[in-house]
Image (tube, rainbow, N blue to C red; front, top):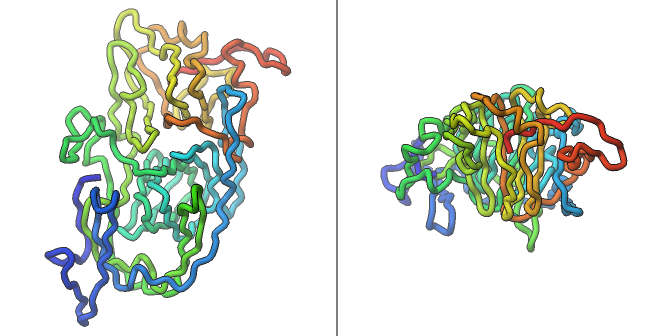
Length: 408
């Protein structure tokens, strides 16, 4: 994110001596992307950031993936997943869907997480509900319902909920950033972008003498061969011993309510709802908005074969009374894979005519590689969903009225 910030105690020139009042040298760490060729920040530590005293294997939560085969649309009910009282935002995550570019996980937590660093890619965590803070090497981020929490690759952090939090975790194998078409060639968000820098909230920084502890464990998710592994690295000094930093790489939050929906005279395609992008995937959000104003417009989408993408919708707010029969509700995920023409339930088309406003909120992830089902996806599936467009449920009888499915 090419938006400069500075916090705490930094020297006037980079890569020069920087000392405390007692003459002790601070240790400068460059945290940068794409091999010194993209955004970076400089952090100044009291201890040596490379000093580890131990490293052990961390057994990750179940990462098993099952192909969507035979191919069909899926409905997953995340609120039906059970989480024990000790689940935290890192080790308690359960894999819902994933491929080699992105993994979608879900967790419900009310307890502090361990210190954690994802060395595989950036994380974009959508806060379905709850409040709390995320402490990082750059400072503290406050989060609330509706926030996207963007955490750059290899940022050491921990989650500290102040109330029960439902978190939808989008973990990339790449970086996550605003769409390029929203940015000037120098990185400023442009006038046609649906949000601007005022909507991005960076960390609050304050040095703390409490972060002088030693032998501190950090859970690290990292690359192992062609896959994903975990290690517990024990640091000689606390990673949060930073006295200052500056640069254009840091975590931040963006609240979904600060996104300004783009509407049109006729139905607009999903790219107008895009909020972020990563390698081989995009993140969009559908929000309460005025809908199409052509006198013959059809507000719900046309049926579409998005031949290059799998489409995942996570339904987070709004009135879904018209969807009786499909099972789609708050906390639902729909997976509509490439190779399958998808769109509204038949009854939704006529029902939408004349509508002026949709009251609905959903987070969408479109991927350019097929998504597999994770453990949580398999354990939360509604098996009747695939047949609702035909009004049938093979093997279980016809259970009635097909439902409106308006926003994907």
